[in-house]
Length: 297
Ligand code: NDP
Image (cartoon, rainbow, N blue to C red; front, side, top):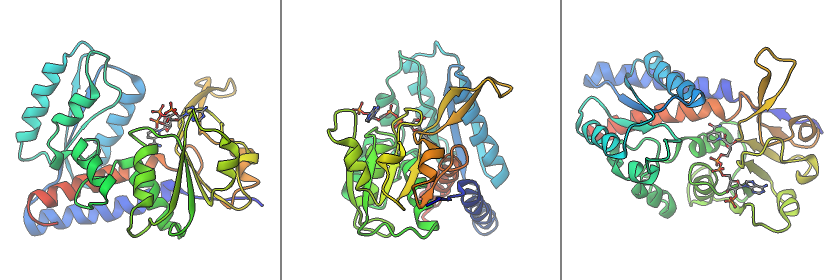
């Protein structure tokens, strides 16, 4: 079997178009412009690229955005003061602090300081708790929300499926496992989470109708870990050496793409799979945050 590829770029683009229409409507009917503040501490090039693409997407959709770039020596107290200001700022409806932060800053302390109503990354303990108990009034982290949206828009039946999630991080693995097992639309799956201490990992993966790889190990998922015709979602973004390219490196996922393509039924490429969905969902969360603040959602 040769897998059909899921075009995350195209699906994200549909969402971007829908979001642009909604932003225009909010402006016209309610005089409301959704606003996002993105805070970058330090000069990690990958983080700087993510922040810049988020800022550009805001501009493209007609949203207000504020990019705050701080030096790597910024203290936690200084960052908390900036968050306190953004929490109070009326034209900012969503706040995102780009991860990872320098080691003197506790990400947990930062996430907990963001107003939960502006926590469009979905990392505040209150929003994580809401995801855990299935309360839809909170914000779902963007990458897990993107995975769920991708499955839904591709017509994959999640209900009743056995979903195996490889990885249990706070950002991807844990929340995606929680949302797909919720009693909700595009969910109701039987979910198994595997991690570095799991036994019989390959066997568990082979039992998946839907396999979601989020471990950060290049090409970890081999074809023998995939059932014939399974849906494989590759969240991984890993930089590997490639002397044939100008930069000397390229991005690959957590899935051995060429081999798994011969076995899976549906497969996301890297890049162009889950990645574009993450930004699209961030914009959706920010628009929703603006509507909630103004009693429109
Ligand atoms: P983390 O490093 O935080 O978590 C990795 C998880 O994978 C952990 O639970 C770890 O287990 C598990 N793991 C690591 N190695 C193995 C192994 N050999 N066998 C089994 N389990 C293993 O990563 P993230 O969740 O933050 O990111 C995962 C990947 O997704 C990365 O490539 C990242 O770049 C990418 N990513 C992509 C995004 C996108 O927009 N497309 C957004 C966010 C991340 P344990 O808990 O036991 O240590």
